[in-house]
Picture (spheres, rainbow, N blue to C red):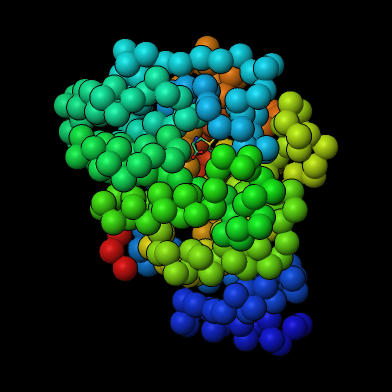
Amino acid sequence: MNKTLFMLIDALAAKRRLSEEEYAFLIANRTPEAAKRLAELAVSVRKTYYGNTVYIRGLIEISNICKNDCLYCGIRSSNRSCDRYRLTEDDILECCREGYDLGFRTFVLQGGEDPYFTDERLEALLHSIKGAYPDCAVTLSLGEKSYESYKRLYDAGADRYLLRHETAAKAHYEKLHPPSLSFGERMRCLRDLKAIGYQVGCGFMVGSPFQTVQDLAKDLAFIQDFGPAMCGIGPFIPHKDTPFRDETAGTLELTCYLLSIVRLIRPNILLPSTTALGTIDPIGREKGILAGANVVMPNLSPASVRKKYMLYDNKASDGAEAAECVDSLRERMTSIGYEVVAARGDVKPL
Ligand code: SAM
């Protein structure tokens, strides 16, 4: 047993913070015993805030048209093999209607940075959704925008915004993105979202190309300092039509380890057990929950477009990933001692 490792875990559980160097040590020297201890602590702190409940979000992938060219992403603009689509306002409202009947009380509108979805169109859409379902929360995940745009969408009723920081290390960020996207701008967006009043989600991929232990330690230190309401953490998975096609995927083991650490840093955080985790392991979603996650986001997009929102190879969109199979998801969560609830599932105060 590595004494320093366990001392650091105890210190993290007690103080909710470590230094970047300590996070690096925790990652570099991890053992199965350390992972088990972290998961026990994470689950126990999670229970204090959220009991044994699991929040569900209906994920509506509104467009796979994207002006950006992120090197890791299957819907990057230079991927000519991607079959592009865009949902209409009616399509999106129909998804919400189906989702509401299935028990969803949060809708997540996610998409590429599609210029069609102007502030005006998104405002109209938000008014329609909020008008029809005033008891529901709406999360947007539509990429980088100006302060003014974020503010308009917030004023039109958006409650939360997910914008993964992708990596908190500037040099690493530049290896994953084209020069038109900058680390500084990504950070500006996250700060603006928080200042406006959104429940903000950041996040990163585990095992993305060129990622070092030090980079991951920076991600954890960033989460500690930024204090997000949500954090999306999933393994990187290569896509065959991207420059990273031959890179290795991130692991379930390290993703779960990091989920536990993030839960201990921010006990009240809304932490999804991601689709990517469910893609690399048939019971990845369950393992994420048992590591300290408390949210799952089944796919509520029309079945006809699900295979087109292919961010990475073999992205799961059926079985427990499909909103219409929420009963099977409920059963799977019950089998590990958790209960899926029909609630907005806002972040609880610390
Ligand atoms: N355009 C919005 C944005 O950039 O925030 C939302 C859509 S974007 C496709 C959603 C997330 O998918 C990204 O933040 C990224 O972390 C994740 N993603 C993209 N490609 C991936 C891959 N190959 N493996 C795992 N996750 C990936």
